[in-house]
Image (cartoon, rainbow, N blue to C red; front, side, top):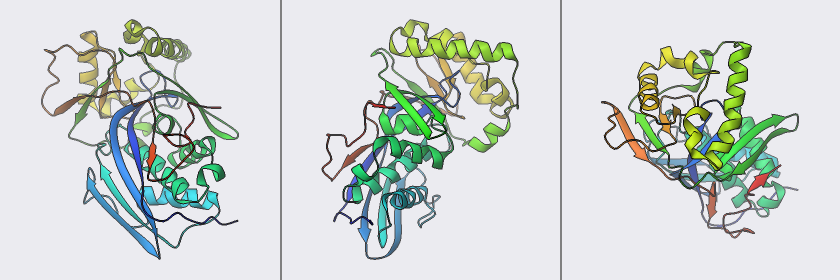
Length: 312
């Protein structure tokens, strides 16, 4: 049965994310307290998109906008699309910098559709929302923390993406270093070899396991836990400034990694006050978002919507 739709505006606040976290390639992610606010309402027809902040003037203002594409994909899963939608995006997450701007758009679109459809949270539960978000994005490591908040471990089975979330230790206080230049995930992925040495894979698997413990229980181990031999070294030639900064931070004892596919850098342990990243980097200390994409303007069954602390 096709859904009916609620009147008025609904709003989603979607957090930035950092994925991989060193050895956790395509698996581990962290939600950060930097947000895009996206609102939408059902209209009599057509698609209208207004964007301010990051991406204003560059992002499309029609049905090709990623938020709208995600909304329509979710509406299709929910049983039918409304006659039209109007979307307003206030973006704060830097675009194409490895901080999950596309995942935030996808998750925001799905959550908006669930909120706009009467009983949308029952027609599509949080587990189904994660599966859809991962299908659109192509992998689950950014969409999982955006949807669920906190530190997430995500994987894919035949049924689709699955994730569990854990809360980082309180002393984990991320700092992101954002460059002026953009990066492209597709190019970063293209730099990866088809195979890696068995010893490197085994070492990275051990460090990824250690990272789960370090980030949740024993942050003193974050420096060795964030060592990676699966992907970062292969991307270095395409992002020399990024890897120079990661190297400098790690030599200073900071657990630093490439954020997602780059070019931003994420530090998971405190950065010395006298550390200078160099010209062209904007350093921003961020909290960890613990709730995931929050829905406002519609009554759901929990204060933060039907997002579960754990999706199995």
